[in-house]
Length: 348
Image 1 (tube, rainbow, N blue to C red):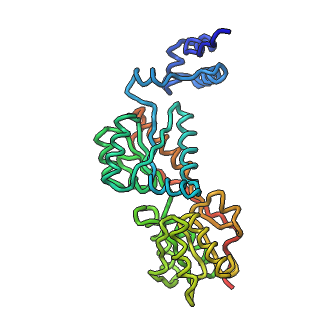
Image 2 (spheres, one colour):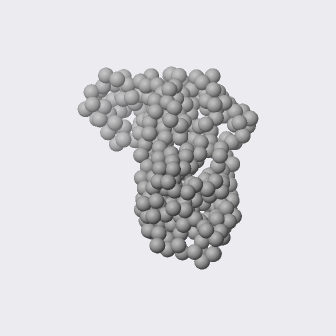
């Protein structure tokens, strides 16, 4: 039995009744193709099972058709080694791969160290080997000017997640300060006045901005602010445990806690249960992440839902547009959503 030959541009052109040049323009998202013709060509590619030859496309032009997404090596490894997984990475990959596939690109995912002296060398090596059309930097790398300077030297477009400066970069964010403010406002509206904030890491600019929003709400409502009620949990369950325990063992303890991510929110539930403190009867809790696990917790957690997948998809779209010469830079702010569940209640 003979081997089935791969479908070619010639086959698609013959199937649709157009020239090979027209099929090539559709494949490369080129101009001057009528929408009806483009739709027929795309339908034929799908039906016949045409697979673009990425290597040939790279040789014909300067584009690699690769988008490189960078994430924090240490935090990602810690989560997987501890068996906790990482929903941020899941959402990041889903959003990026979906948009890249839609536009004929591929997403490559790499981990680099947080330390600037290591990160620069690691990123330089990956870029030299892959020559991507664009690079997505996620926190904390998106705050590292050394890395963005390196990308500019290479002449590679850069998207920064969590930044809002715009300018020469594709900056995609949610309103981080607004998320911290909204979480605190929800609790204040339930008559809570003693609200603590379990922050992530000072290396993450988005975490610092959320704390700013929390402070702004306390100031606006005239609520008491205590410096020792801003705890550093490093986005980690184990690190958050002693911070929460110290708070909840105080005689005048917080009646509500905001956690910067779900792992730390689970730490709050764990300590509260161990101390016999009911959630939400005695303590209200809001998480600023909303991974699937918080819907299954007891009680299900009130949370700020981050548009992670949508932010990465927007970053990919912006980089692809920049690579094709149709756009350069820009700032995009996507909305978050407060999801009310059963971990918050009016103060009795």
